[in-house]
Length: 312
Image (cartoon, one colour):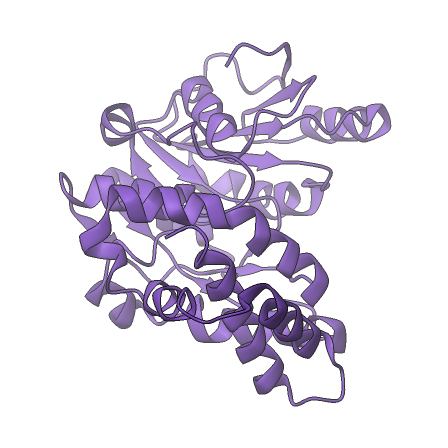
């Protein structure tokens, strides 16, 4: 965490003694709508919650000024950290944690929207009452855009991410994402995110694998909607970034990753001749609008596994 950072605190920041710090990183997104939703709960929280926002190198002065003005008017204590250059998902979250003062840290991505009006109150009550080491609240698509261009991502998310609480609890370390995640401060002090992960993906799952060996991971029903659905093209690009991170995770936790369908598929595809050509066909099929959405989603999952075949 050596890059230059500008820090802005609103009037409520000084003197606050929160139990929970909400940590919101963003890059080029505007987190204003999420902040408005969170601040609507301020009067009912009794000072239990603060927010730390990290602009991870957006370099948009107009956005910074708009956000600074909005934060200045918020009732919740808020700190805005603006980085001159991008640090990445793992380093950025570690920086957020170092700026937080609460006994529990709630990682919440800027493209999430709480599904309940008492979202923060439920998290604060859990943190104060039970102080779990790690708790994941869940994803939904309740408020997500229902547009044809996002249909494939919606199908993928509904199958693999928007999982009911009871099902998540059966494999607690698998269903952990830093988009709606409560972590006790001492736990994060013992196990921070690995800054060796770059690009997109797997840094949160790998972290959960490490943490689950030492601490109990629980799942609760306090979901938020993932608003940032992607087109097939954007999602395929993210999968390409994630392949080295998947390989890093598999090398560190082979006994866990070996049970993942994506790993088993990658190992099988590794034996297939002319895999680069097949990858192109898989990606093309996922982009073909006249194919059924289920077939396109399956093609994109195969494409991801074919990418991972080079990393395992």
